[in-house]
Image (cartoon, rainbow, N blue to C red):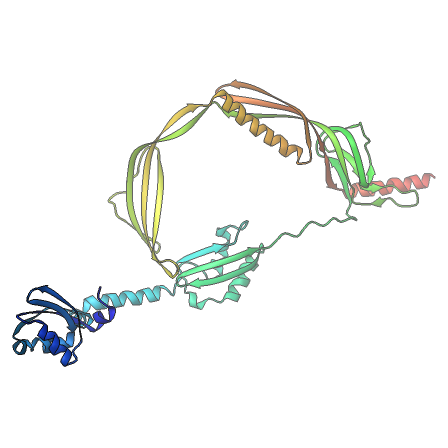
Length: 410
């Protein structure tokens, strides 16, 4: 391997043939002419390298050393520069390309968004576009403070926005605002109603006035604990009712699934087409639209021009593949159907009962009709059916009016 410094300054390969070829090397040493890598290629032949500007001087030693000296090669940057002097296209085009790359790196060709979970990329991109960040925008004109304030004003769900520029790539890092915890307002007018029908087994009241007692049956929407607490010494108190109501409940849930399912079987046939995207323009490398009929999966592979981590260019090479397949029908086994339906029904039941609820007894019945399997789950459970509901102004006024009427009667 040649040294980079040798290639930049240039060197020549010299072949010496004669009875005493090493005498040429002795003369070079006497005159302090630098040479390296002397290699004998025969009994009377030596090949070595020297500086490009010393090659002609060494060739003049032929008579003094009684040897034949031949310059076999000349290499290096100086020779390349001389050749390019008469071929301007070969150096103008790379120079123009470097200038275009430098100018292209001042514009945004890729936007990355990091840190969002509930807020979608589309919402953030729309807000960024209104703030001046979009594909093809001039990033040196950005003001991070202005962009941050505009985006947060448009998307209140974000509490922090950071803008980082890496060449022609912009990274937007966001943090979403955390929801404030719901505070328990003891003065809020709230009552507790039944979320579903059931027989009350245990009613525990922490705040409020109980309407039902243990052993009674409540239907969906019945008031269980009132937020209006009567008082013997004045107006009734309006409180935020709280407590738990354990009740025995019953469920009947049905689920349906087909007896057969479809599976893709790929035939091995594959169609490909290529195109190039320059900015917003597309250049197809195929003659027609090549609309592929039948069932197939489309796989699109994109390769964007640029250097990862440094810059990205608005040039994307795209390969589109269409994989042909056929649909084959298969039938579920009886055990697969029962297991799938049972898992689905038990999942719905557990979600309805809640994590603190108890499933006392359950039974599942299976049947089939019209190409579908039907499962019905009947279950008896014990769960908390208490649900908060805000008292209406009419209920509050009615309670106060009833208290005044009772006071007048006394």
